[in-house]
Image 1 (cartoon, rainbow, N blue to C red):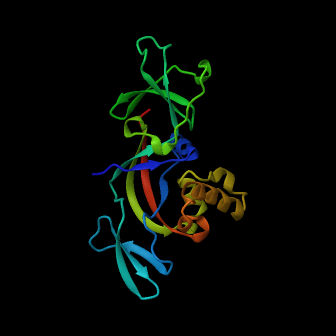
Image 2: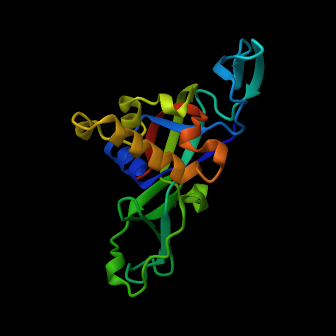
Image 3: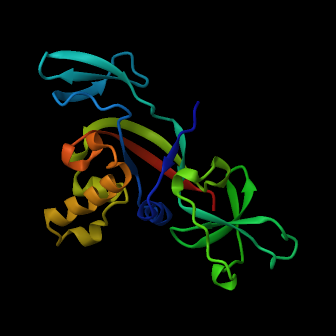
Length: 217
């Protein structure tokens, strides 16, 4: 089974570390026409879904890249350092994770050992790489899909935004709807808004994944 890479924002990584993230929202690879009303799992199951065309009252079958029980890995912003201060590790590369500024030695098999490392001790600043550049062997986050749904992005509730690491419910009780919408919009358009059809105001169809997260650290 293919292990998909899912880029994560720093606040989502921090939510995983806190044990608070249980869902992810991703754009459908190809957006259906505007007059699609709903999607439901096809009777043949698996990755196939039926979309209902509200204009023609017909259904069209699409294949999604995710199914329950699928295992993915999370990507996050990172940097590499050669730590010459650690005896016995000279010349080996430490991984620095930007979300929480923690450093680890990759041990293989998705496991990591904490490094006694402070980037402030080095004269060179971290050369950060984007989350999409993270290879599988440096990922400390495993995402196990437990359920898949297809929804318009604007249907996300405050509870669902919190589950996706985009909003902390402890702060949302007294917040108005515009603040919540702004938080979701900033995340969504910051990641996917370069494609006009995926911009939040267009209310694109999204794949909602319920996930169980595991940290290798």
